[in-house]
Image (cartoon, rainbow, N blue to C red; front, top):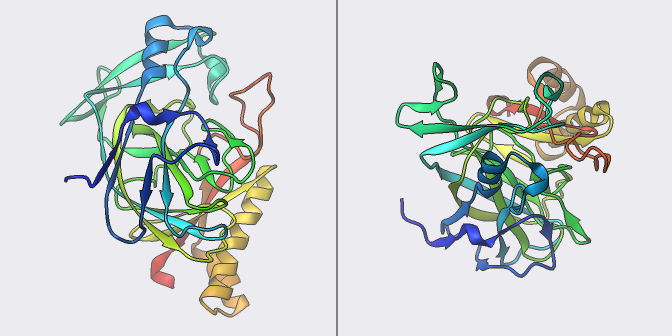
Length: 308
């Protein structure tokens, strides 16, 4: 497909912030496509040098931001993912102190270049898996300060690492500043849900999206719409708080938006609304001595569309 607008990877930087000048202004609902190019410079440096301390490239740079005309605090951006293009290779890396299995891996960087071709993603010499490209980091800008592109995930998005943020999905992101200021980065060629290593099969790439606007949405966390489901993101610390908040958003949507009887919503949710842990980035700022250690949790609450 052709693109209406192209944003180069050189526009990538770490952090979502309102004081970063927009690189594009866009009218919502036009169907115009924006191609966000992302890079993998940090993984190339780690592969070459094997030293976190020697990095010059930022971790998880996001390309943007895009100013959406008419977006105001309280609205939500509806970002439709049309396509994700992958390069000829990606990266699998073990970073000291990162991921659920760091204690099983060496205390130094271990890096592997992973070929990607028409057959799939060559994760090992014996295992080729189908590519399932996704966007790991997508969000809008906060009214105050800077939100990280690593962790924590916030009510405005960020490094959510959700496999559902893939072609065909629409991501709904709360707006806190005029224009929303959308940025996108951290493309994965394939990732198991939960991302045990904290580094999936990472890759440079191109995310092609269009943007619409939901006025007065009042969302307190991101949501993802697929062909079959509404996925509500729960954020909190401890994990029980994430679970409760995500359940509340599903329940309130059924009762307040769709007009359901409260007991009907309660019963139906207990039967068909599945939950799971989302990406590994947590929902609170991590201990500064352990910057890759997530605090809190991201949960996903899946509401099947066929019941609505």
